[in-house]
Amino acid sequence: MTPGVKPSAREARRLQTRERLLSAAVAEFKRAGMAGADVNAIVTAAGVAHGTFFFHFPSKEHVLLELERREEARMAREFARFLDGPSDHIAALVEVVRLVTELEQRLGSLLFKELLALHFSPSRPTKDDWTDHPLIVLLVREIERARGDGVVHPEVDGFYSATFFLLGIYGVLTTTANDNRDTMLSKLVASAVRGLEIH
Image 1 (spheres, rainbow, N blue to C red):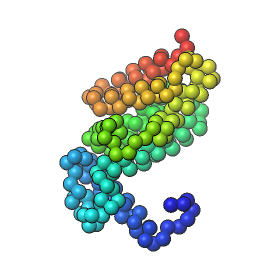
Image 2: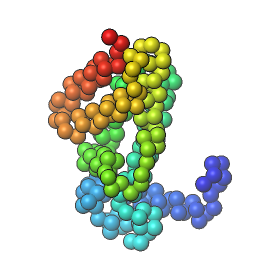
Image 3: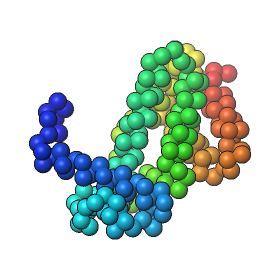
Image 4: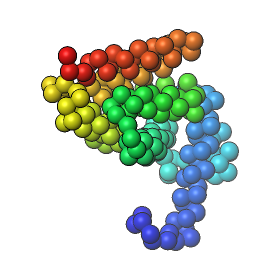
């Protein structure tokens, strides 16, 4: 839909139905996981017919793709606002840890792990490139900006550094007990900073 154009009443109802379905599906996924989620429970909670789910989302995986897209956009907006203020690459890494950790807390451990599993799945319903993920794009830009400013080693590759860092966060959050997470995440940031430094 074109921004600034008011949707027709029919389109507005369609969008409202999609939002109700997405909300009900996310609640069901939090409860039972994607594989265990019951489409009947989702459509009952959303107050729609069974076939309406598949009209809006061809599969349960498509619900996760929509959730991923929205959450990445939300985190990217927050990160962009953070980068607009006074910060450096170290503070940027800490902020990314905060954003991803907050996402895991909001979604819950089960749904967060399922979102990551779909993200890295070879059977992901849609193919994409790293540039389709706004949070990593912003982190790559920040590392490259710091490299251009001479505070990061000139041979550092922004894409690989950002990717390895995000994979580290995901690894800590999905495999580390809560009582060790803060320490592990702090060490992850420290290691990433050492890897970026000019020695």
